[in-house]
Length: 474
Length: 124
Image (cartoon, rainbow over the protein chains, first blue to last red):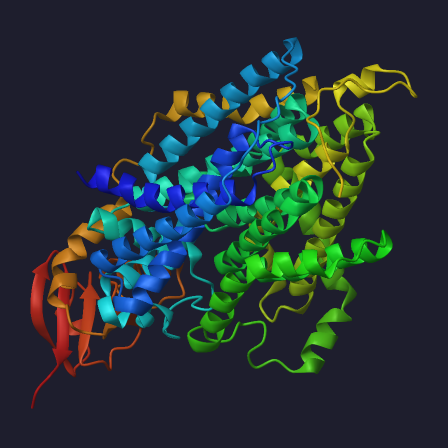
């Protein structure tokens, strides 16, 4: 019975997310692959669940009745939006290019996914409550939210650990527990599994949508090739959810550039919403929001396509989550260790220390290989062998995404440079997770830039095969 | 494409090999789950309290096992905040075998068995 209740608890916000995604992406000339829709629905559904639970906490201490009422209200609102914006007209036929290569790649992806599922199962049986950060930070906080009733603000007491971390993951877990009726490990495990699955489906679907089936399968293969993804999926950390929201933002922004002009604001709003969920998941997500704004602004200025209406549409989607994040930071979260009791001179002294740069660079090199395995070498080799695509839209989108990743990497390096904590200790305890956060976006951007096999086979100057979906520029 | 496909299969094959050697459940029973169940009666007894003190069984929280025990206790007793402080009106002690080790100002309020006790400030 509790399993069924858990299913209902996960399904209600996902249904609302499904309607929201359909309402915001209704341009049928750029149809979304089912894998991308499922990925977006599951991931954004968990984000929505955390928000409805937060509202239920504010409204009535998060009692199950209030949680269900807020969920139904969210579903009705999403349903109304979908009804007013339901797609009309014929859906464009996707040109399928199923060939021997795609079939072979599909078999590889299925085998790799089965391996990932087996790893998840083994780790979940071994540690159903997750690893250290999961039970010591995220699930402990979820327990406070779920069990404390009207005293739920106790979850952010300065006495507890890392209470300045945002609350998407614990609130989503507590939301599922509200349906189950007790704080069992099935809920965080189910959320961890669906976030990992959504990430793989999203990269596969997004690349299939933008570059064709082969690239979609290569994207999924690249993610599943990273040992850290298989290992961390069942650890129930917040890095895979964050990686999902980073990738969702990037892919939705690129899709928004391709849909009809009239449909762009809604797609941009959905991208803004995904970026907001990133900030609501971890503090690194707030850095990501800033990096997205800077990268988009730089590109708009460079390509002379500054459009304030598009920026406003993105901001409108971001606004509710930004308000949630800022109000959480102002009202509940204690200051971060990076800012408390630090003088400007402390930061400058650390920034001027060349040994810190060497330590960080050395750790990045070692950790990239350890976390991502051979794919970190194989993907650049494959990219060089395949060459750049001749598709100018894809090249521009990839360049923008790579700039965004570079800005994020610079931001992460900046935090390591000025951290008051022991640098070696902090690198050893967090660098692998930062790599995990950025890997899906990096693999996506590199594959977006690569020529597809049809282009590769053709001589220069010959039009590539029509394996990609139709695109439209505003 | 072959390179990427090959790289994608490596972790899956590694998992199969590892499971073949170690089996599905490598560590036996989930230690945190067992710990959580053992502390469940104490969590019930603390219902209504907002915070409780903590007497570490391993001397200090500096050692990995000491820190792990402290955070596991926090996890199991949530939503009661466990403070590393014996000056609270109620104090949790787990695995303190020798009663003479208890601070002089504390007395046993309730014994949950298996070394788990709830202490309170001694009344004069």
